[in-house]
Image 1 (cartoon, helix red, strand yellow):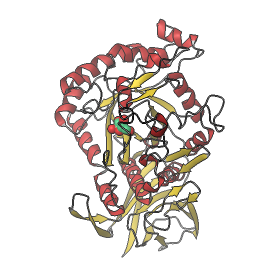
Image 2 (tube, protein in one colour):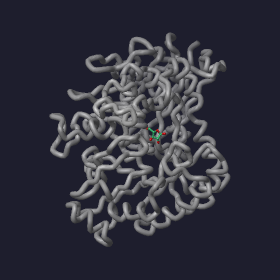
Image 3 (spheres, helix red, strand yellow):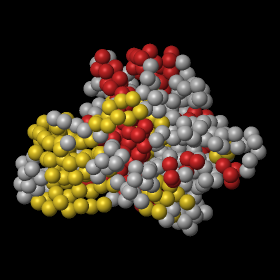
Image 4 (tube, helix red, strand yellow):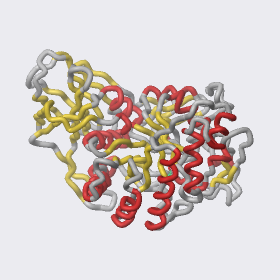
Length: 499
Ligand code: AHR
């Protein structure tokens, strides 16, 4: 089947916020220590940050970076990790000692070097509303109060002006230290939000929602007036205990579920008349969940160096294939289409574990998912426009739970730029072996057509140390002609620019 694709440039879905290309970094596995922060490494700069990782982060123009957790934050006390007297603490979420040598000042310094917005997640597990608002004071007040003065004394005269704050993490979950009931959550978020906004009225606040109507209604009723964001998290291939990763086709089946949490939240915000005030922050997302073979390391008396073992399964590069890349592209296209309500999304995490960058002592690996960010950030336009086709090819896929479904294999998103002429389309082909011919019905006679894409030899292609199976290729398709046919490779993510 040949697809005839129509674009209506005049029908605009919205101007996408760059922040949907955000990321997350947690004190977990080798994300901070032995990851981006490694003062001993010859690749580190004068402040201890790995320059190769930061350069890769700059290339994908990371707009925002959520920190320090995750579950980690729910027993974290920020005051122990600033100033000269750092107190190591035992991290009760991941059951390891954190030296606290990387704290707020190091995080802000790192964000400045990368050129991204900081986004701080507070301790709503064992922490108090007051501790959260003290943190806002430390970061954002010029010189009033003991905490702003403490920042100045630590050598940081200018306030950090952290605009984005998340109250807590997944505090609905039994796994989270200091988990809360819906009522407790509503009360804590309300008090914390009030105090944080009293310190800095410009601070934008988010708090965790859940796929549970009672929890969300309670939160929004109690705190809607204080919140600017509502936070959702999703990992589709959940395998925290075992390592039975979904097959390529099962990963494709997950792509139809991407919009689900957004649709639910949009409906609720509309019903509560909050959709013009509160936007969705998709605060943590990734196809793969994390695997934690070493959760009992300390109990079993295994040396910490084994905990930091790069052979940790989360860091097995062969697990991040074209399936991950296609899922990531499908997610980003969906968020672009939902740009009226989704204002931020943070891929979890940026480095190591299941991140899009993998680091080792001598360098980094850019996993397949990294190249998807590169394609979307650097090659797509910022305004989402209407696109359709009368027919979409399909394939049968069997979901992990055994149910069969008919899946559309082509996903298309159309964009244009607000500051220059031209169109850029994202075309994803989920089919493992069949290429797809498309025909663009657009009036762009004589404009230049370039295709930038990733595909790899097979759906299982991946990148590793000294192995680059997935990299961005460019095809110069010449000048645009009506009825021009473009061939889309199997298992590929493509940006077609007509400029
Ligand atoms: O990234 C590991 C954990 O996954 C995060 O701490 C938590 O927020 C999510 O469940």
